[in-house]
Length: 210
Image (tube, rainbow, N blue to C red; front, side, top):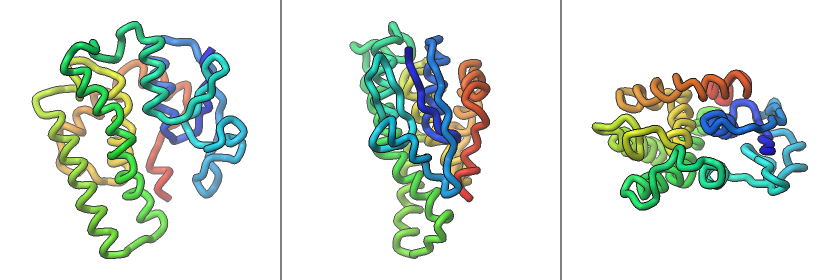
């Protein structure tokens, strides 16, 4: 049995989505953010970092979104949600899968936090503005002449990077990038995504910006 330690309005929502896409059985343990928006201390009883997502699979506790997604797809996917490893699409798939957390997430998270904490340093803000534009232009460019990031079908890389784009959308950063907006409409209309929202609870990243 897979247990997802699920924090509201967090990255653990995409693990619920992944499990719905694969049609796997799982159990949800629900946690709610503190008034400060931090994860509750109880999550540290499950994993020392106390952050979402955390999963338990056959007694093994795992954190880190990218690692969890890659592990579940490799172990349970039977070829679903990933290109064949001997194709060029697989290299792109791995790149996007790890880019979402490794490069894109820190910049977009900081851009969400600056207004939350009233940070208005001109040097830092200027750097951040340029970095956000660089990454969002890069993401928009990856969708040129394609519906998905790694090949002609939906993969776990699309699922993983969706959270980043939702974060950018919640911070009003996407602007005039039609491919990105069309992608978000496309993937958030998937039946598995809608089931994940129904089971995981309301999902609104704008609530994390107050």
